[in-house]
Length: 347
Ligand code: UFG
Image (cartoon, rainbow, N blue to C red; front, side, top):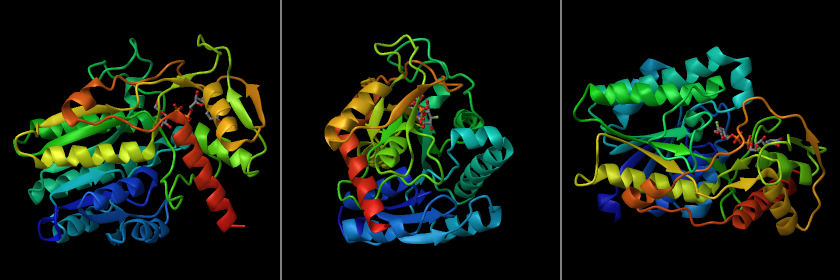
């Protein structure tokens, strides 16, 4: 795709963890990118860093998509964009249990405002950032996209499940609009450049940033939430996926929507590697790649955790021609590299 024919893509939440990696992959695939982000849980510095990596500057708009009028004006100004990738959402499971209304308000209003503006302006290609949380406690493994969704344990998870339903109802009401929901398993890792990565605000909820922050001396020790699950070593199994692999899947998904021969009204794809690793596997691999012993302790199970969760990746392979390429060591060493770079810079 050369400059003259480059397609424009709007990325909501493009300064966040997965959004920022996707902006880079889009730019490197020839797209022009318009980032909209309210910076409530991210920093505009990621834009400067993506410029360092790609040499291309995305358009950046600081805006809260919950503001219906502002959202509409933003879309009107950029209505030539050929597609929208919607990441903007709150995402902390624990916080969502404490503040459910804030989660429902933020995640639904921003989604509905984007869809309304797009509908009005006849912008018709939409990628939705969903989560494997919509499967709840799955009946069969690996999980295929046809597995029945269940009410997730957390309000955050429920925003993803209901958002998919809102999207489906909207699509059923129009013949032009097309969307793909991408259900992420457990994204970890960071860009090879070491310039962008995950930066959770406050105490991390997720395993990987907790491990790297513990090893960096920011946290005292990792608490392992239970070792009495019916798994090989008693700790839960998850499908960890490198964030750059995940980002690449978004590029392929938007390309699919832009290809009239391939696009469908609505499709759903799992994004995972299809391989399950336990918490102990992750710790062991971290110790191998970092050459450092991790301080950890076993504690009680965390409510809502399921013993096993890993994806069937067949559909993404067949329809998107996408497979995750990076292995667990590569994921973990890039997370560690990012954490060390970040701590060194902020000493
Ligand atoms: N874990 C610990 N200690 C920690 C953090 C996590 O032992 O401090 C364990 C958890 O019990 C779990 C595993 O590490 O067994 C992975 O936990 P994460 O919190 O990293 O990830 P989850 O699988 O719980 O959650 C992820 C996403 C959510 C999404 C969910 C869908 O982070 O956004 O998958 O299943 F909703």
